[in-house]
Amino acid sequence: MVLRSLCSKLTVCSQINIHKMVVKISKVLLLDNVDPSAKTILEENGIAATLSKEKFTTPELIKELQAYDGVVVRSATKMTAEIIENCPNLKIIGRAGVGVDNVDIKSATKNGVVVMNTPGGNTLSAAEHTCTLICCLSRNVPAADASMKAGKWDRKAFMGHELYGKTLGIIGLGRIGREAGIRMQSFGMKTIGFDPLVSKEEAAKYNIEWMKTDEIWPEADYITVHTPLIPQTKGLLNDASFAKCKKGVRVINCARGGIIDEDALLRALQSGQCGGAGLDVYVEEPATNMPLVQHAKVVACPHLGASTKEGQARCGKEVAEQFVNVAKGTDFFGVLNAPALTHANGIEDWITLATQLGKVAKSFFKVNAVQCNIASNGNLLTRSGRCLEAAFSAGYIQSDYSSVNLINAAALANNAGVNISTSNSKEKIFNFANSCSIVIKAETKAVSLTGAVVDGKPVLVAIDNRPFSFPLPMSGSFLIFQSSDIASAIGVVTNAGASLASLACTTGDGDKWVAVTTVAALSEDALSRIRIPNIIAVNF
Image (cartoon, rainbow, N blue to C red; front, side):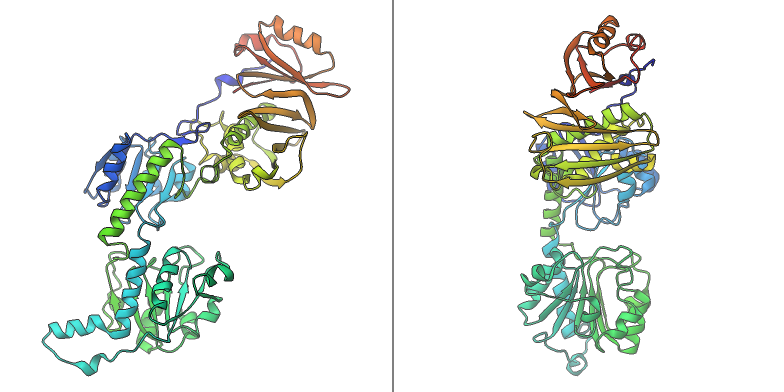
């Protein structure tokens, strides 16, 4: 069979260095009044940074970002799919804050762009703001202040109530929800809460009783929401849920507009079912639902949850430090869309192995319509499934795309027809404490590849569960074929001009798998002269 070298097709992963696990960041644009400390930290670490107070239109931002490979935003700038797809140099988007609904993560992932946030940066500011609104609702502070400024002295109009002994329902028990709960406990409030990702035992550590939402509604005197805005949380508090609440319940939203249905809230306020609302966020910002904002029982703020000097300084500092860590490859805390990066600590060599196995697999099949199972074997790789999937995908489809990295590889592979599943076992394979076995199936054939890491280097251990005479390092240029007459086959290879660096063959009877590394990559002309059926060439 006449072969063509895969070397000429392989493209370099342009944004993520798979082997060193770093993102190359040289110049960052800082928008939305990000704290100046971000610029200082970036520049101290050799990354140029520009602070801009401009409010760019979409075309203007696309033009501006052509000169940058990183951008940091707060909540004002929307990083849409249109912007991301038209900024080919963009490698990383940082959100100086928690919520990332202003960043199209799906588009970023597809285009191989890292998205990260600062999950702890404004936690205290947002939690304190939540507590402030609860206190304002309990004592009618804003209305009393407005009355005084109007020249009135109307004590009877602003009768309040104590928070002591009241029940606070917390929807979302992440950092902000927990911190708000801890602070309101000091007022003597009982705290109950719901979060599908938090266990009853974990909630109890913060003196919060875990309940289902339908159990919270009739129990809570106050309800505060601290979830992202996703399909499951949109309109979480609506006509039906308000009807289940105590009459006069007060609600607070410092998370995202839309978690509380604004129309349902207005109806509940008008009927008295809801006794008051503290709102910091809205479906549309700036807010357009003025009947709700202007309601006498609403305390309304223009999205101030993170607006403290300390919170903004912390977010600016943290996002810059996270950029530096990602650029150095030392830490990937805050990365939201790249499990191969966030879970790669300690298994970087295995990421390289899976990538190399992906290249070998593609050399066998050439097509993308395949079923793959990636089995990670051993204690070291217990939680490595998504990392190995991304790395294998990068190796498998690298020759088909101009820009593939560990962020977009799994999505691109899936779209191309590569169906991947993962599994893990603790058993030793071929006496290796840890190994990676991949089974690839197409309509007409199936192949299994087993690899491991020896002294920090990826090695090919077996093909079709037949171990090689010794693990073969996956580096340089490879030729793989089957033969019952190895000496003659090697003669054919050397006669084509190949200088052999190493050779290994599988053990057992019958045709053997043979893997040969050559001193240099063979030219297409040399490959065309090797008349060995089904031989494959791989360049690492």
